Figure 1 (cartoon, one colour):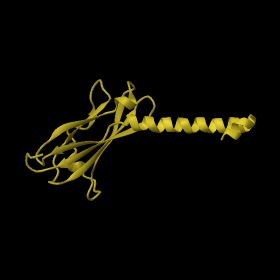
Figure 2 (cartoon, one colour):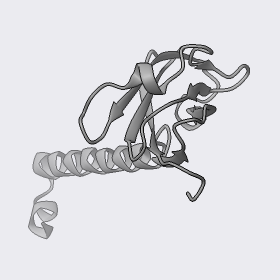
Figure 3 (cartoon, one colour):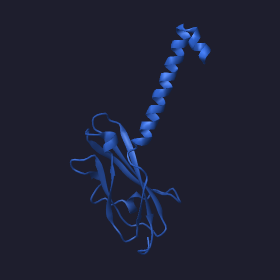
Figure 4 (cartoon, one colour):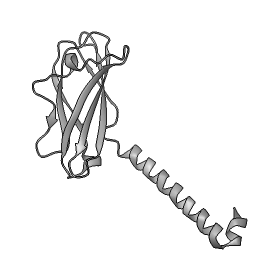
Length: 144
């Protein structure tokens, strides 16, 4: 690579532009990794429990405000959509007032079920859509 820089001129400028582009790409990839909407969180619940969960999009949306695009629950063993059984429609998934957090209520489920809940939110300023995920493990009894 030293020979390229010794030549100078257009070739050096082309290599430098490529290196800057690669550097930016790596920086963006690193930021995406560190600014993910929500780290994967695992929550344990019994089939009888119903409680609120939330995904905080503050790191990626900032103060722009957000709209809920959707909350989808998928059984990880079967790939089946279990949203109707696992995510309550009342109260409906919604932003928590004054925050960039989406709140929703989990319910039901079957013993030993492993459910991935994807929460999608849209930045009201940029229109960008982000997804945060929570894993819900349904267990019986209180020994979890």
